[in-house]
Length: 352
Image 1 (spheres, rainbow, N blue to C red):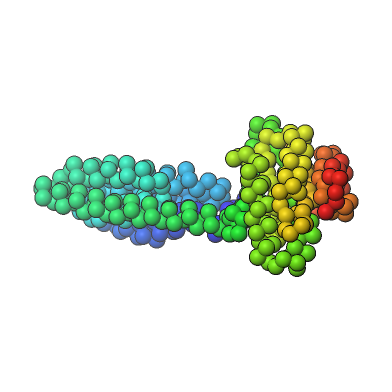
Image 2 (cartoon, rainbow, N blue to C red):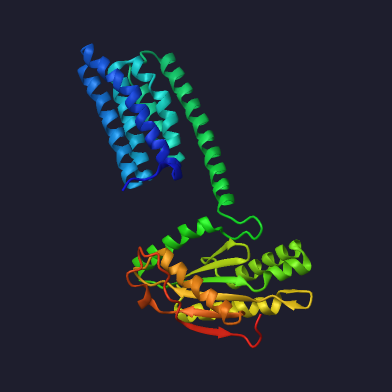
């Protein structure tokens, strides 16, 4: 299975540096062999092979973090050896390597590698035979490292901010549908690993269109914000709250046993009914609840919660339907056929 570099910036960098190393270092390796510098040529080939195989491994497995560190170490060791054997021409490779390391690995790791490389090169007289040359190299190399450090820090900060914005709904602050897919998969993996329960609620505000029609879209937006604030107030820090679109939301509850999932669903439903109003009209919602069943796919799990919520709508709204029939998920890991939403329903005395 091959990873797609479009969704992984670090993987894209690794593949880029793999191609750049092959195109930039391989011709020099050939030149070394042609001019009798056999050992230096072998070092160049080792750098190309190590970086190339690392890039191939990252592309195949998607494990970019460890591969990036391995490539940075290969670059650093290779440059130190080449500068020791080839003299000044080898020292010139230090500067792009310093920049590459700060792009590839965490800043503290890149800083350590930079210190080691600069100290190693400055310690020998092959390329830098006198003190002024050593000092000039050390100062310029440190400046390049500092510029690379600041650039990497700023780029990481901006990337983190952009990812946070891209993962959030701007109106309610809830995570969006794209982020929900990743969170479901992570929760499933944790549940399988730790044999721990995890629950999913999907809920929809009842007759929301009539709120927009009667009070305007701005009032409808305020309702969505109020409901979102209530959900966050009633749930834990580790729970994950999503806006799936329009007036439909999802809530992922790690560690929630089926009984706890029912209690949380009812608490949310009654709290919204009691505290959110527009004019003299109470806002209500219909909820579908489903615990994760070992071995099922994320689509199957979400589909069961969806169908339970739609059943709550059909049965009169302002209620919770709980799908607790894991046997119906057998064999659904890759099946697109909806699972039947058998389960139990809990409702209030007043339908929405």
